[in-house]
Length: 244
Image: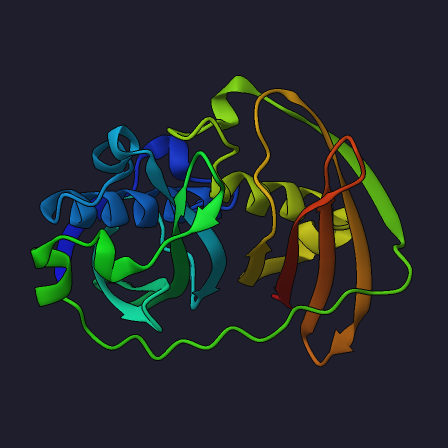
């Protein structure tokens, strides 16, 4: 396992004095890159070979949002599954206890042909040696027959990553921004499940379609479909909000 500590920057604190979710996502992404760098398996290492990582699934659960000046301790580990998916898990805590956890699933693709590649043909010895079991399971995400709301968003140049694709965390922000104002005001975002279907490249406009499947106790969940200019679905996201 790889472990590191992070301080929450002042810019990462919202109006309620607590950490914003995008800050947590940036920290997890940085952790994944730092760990991959030790194994010579970063995007920068792979691009000259004509291959790269593509994220397929992402689940984040938040126990609570720490306040400013909290120090986060983050631990991450990885393991192959069926020689195709590279699973990566995260655990986050601070001085008060657990903060969040996350599970991700990645695949290597041939950039020219767009096809997935077998991990054992491209993984470095250190990647293999340090692999640990990751028990995460990713259930199928529902697709409602009707969408109750649709909102446009523009892809900014700051949204693009090393692959010239929209960064995975941006989809989370689009989905969170698409919920009704009363939900964002009265609830905390406690879980996000995302399935990435197609990359969003370059500039342009996308649309976020949203459906509300129901309320269970103090929790409200929404299903979001992120659609490109041509009407193709780029990602499907579920956001779960808790009152209080």
